[in-house]
Image 1 (cartoon, rainbow, N blue to C red):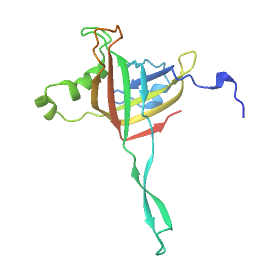
Image 2 (image 1 turned 90 degrees about the vertical axis):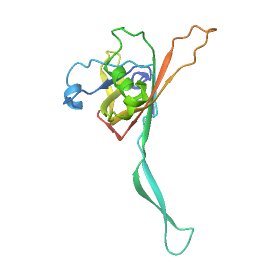
Image 3 (image 1 turned 180 degrees about the horizontal axis):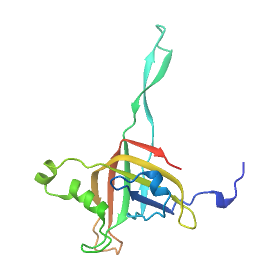
Image 4 (image 1 turned 120 degrees about the horizontal axis):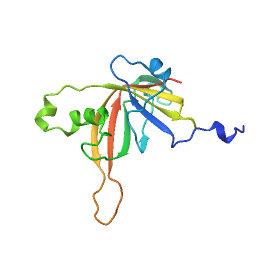
Amino acid sequence: MFFPAQNYLKGYNFFVKTLQGSENEIDVMNQRLTYNVGFQSISGIESGIKTKEIKYGGQNASVFMVPDGRIVQKATFKRGMVTLGNSLIDDFSSWIAQHLLLSTQSRLNRTVTTRNLMVGYLNGQQEPVKVWGLYNAYPISWKLSEMNAMESKIAVEEIVLTYSHVLGIT
């Protein structure tokens, strides 16, 4: 089946939004979205079900695959770093710092704060056309790109979040 080129989503035109407090996905979708986090790339968003084998009938050749819980997800977010004091240092960065970049003692005494995130593709008018919610997300790792005096690349930070589940919103 053939679809015109304009029907395909452009992989480079996407957004990330952290939901605040009592915000929910429907309320956010019904207003003009303001995206509070910018990223170079996002990977690893997936949903799946664990299965286990059950043999039956006294024959090892006969096997049923039955559901056995959800697959734990990890999504990787990459973005260019900005300087301290820059207005682009956002609430998302503060959340990451609270969990991963504070002193060891501070991290050990802190409870995990989860957030719900919306990620999705935008059309040419910067309106969301396909959106997913990542629920109960929290950061589990942070990594800085290589520092190399022989290159003039932008410094990139990589943040890995885990989340309980993903749901399609649109």
